[in-house]
Structure formats: C-alpha cells, structure tokens
Image (cartoon, rainbow, N blue to C red; front, side, top):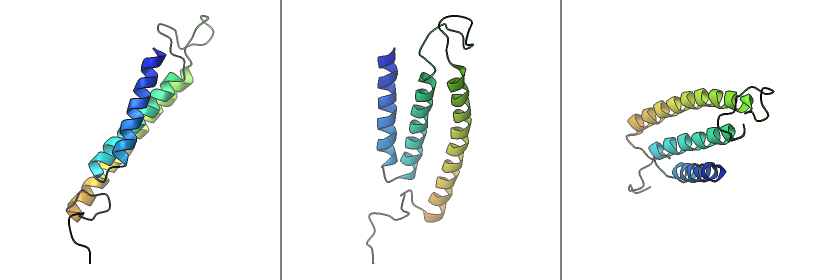
Length: 112
C-alpha cells in the first residue's frame, strides 16, 4: 500500500509540475490543482496508512492520527477556493487580452 501511495504522489507531483511549466493558463490551473491534490494525499498519508484503525488515540494499539485528517479537510477547502479564484482570474485575463498565453502575448505575432 505504501508503494501505491508513493507512486500516486510521484505521478501527481510530476504531472502538476509539468503542467505548471506550460505556457497556457488552463494548463497552469490544472497543474496547480494536481499539485494541491498531491499535497493533500501526502498530508493524509502522514496519519499512518492503516485500514480499519480508529482515529482516536488510546483505544487500540494501532490508531490513525486525526491531526493530518483535519489538515487535509482544511487544505481541501482552501484549495477549492484558490482554484475558483485562479479560474476566474484566468478567464478575465483571457477575455481582456483575447489570448490564453501566460504572458499575455501571442507567440506567433511579430514583436516590434
């Protein structure tokens, strides 16, 4: 199970960084979303990867830590709000500039 979580973290992080480095705003938004999902999965895995264990410390010998679960819930809400803000910001920039490029310039146009 640890190998599967580590592979998922690696794939999400790699795809997120690749999309962030693209030159289009939609790709950057998707990259930020994938990167935030990778961070959420990393925080969630910090609470021990056990199945069927309660989240209350002290009832059994093996328990899951409830703090990372609370951090992930908070991070999900914050990342949803930031994603909505970035989507609106990129749509506003695309409408005003009539372009989806991150710099606001069309790479096919000749520069003076």
